[in-house]
Length: 240
Image 1 (tube, one colour):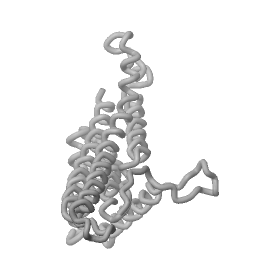
Image 2: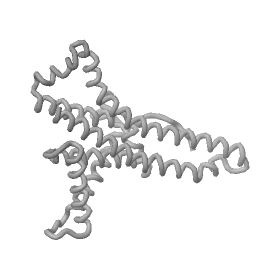
Image 3: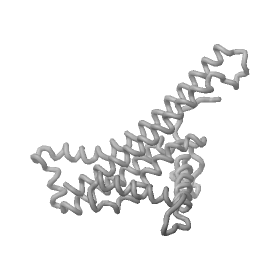
């Protein structure tokens, strides 16, 4: 097995224009969106007044996300629940894509930066909506006007830090696992040189354990953290 650490592959070009590449991340994102859509349709198909079976799971998930949004952002914020749930599911399944022989969408900075920019727009919109344009601009001058440059940098740093945090954790796991796989192949060839070159016996076992951590535990944690940061920032913008 050849071990390489590269960015997402370019699968083709939209309308043949080399400035509009279709990448592996884009393809995998569409697959994940289709899966989430199918899951939502499946869980909500033939709903009844008395829930049972899959409807119980669907309603439980809705109640949980509504409760999480309300407890984090404050009362009257349940309108954000669909976005937070979509963000959480996209992050989780995007990270878990590697379990199904696909490159994780969250290992591409474009994905996490896109989500962070949407959150940034929500933050700015709510600051202006609840504080007015004058209040929004005045916030850059607090506590004193000389702090304006730092306040502007702080505002810009929000989406940057959110995107790099998520991307860094997922891409870091991908790089570490790939490096260990490469090292185990070299060690296997050195110790078990009598085996055919395409059989790296020492690659069996440990990589599976590492994938279980990086692909499952870290995926769940990063989806939760990114969603919590989104709720915290937007909630603070509404209450500031």
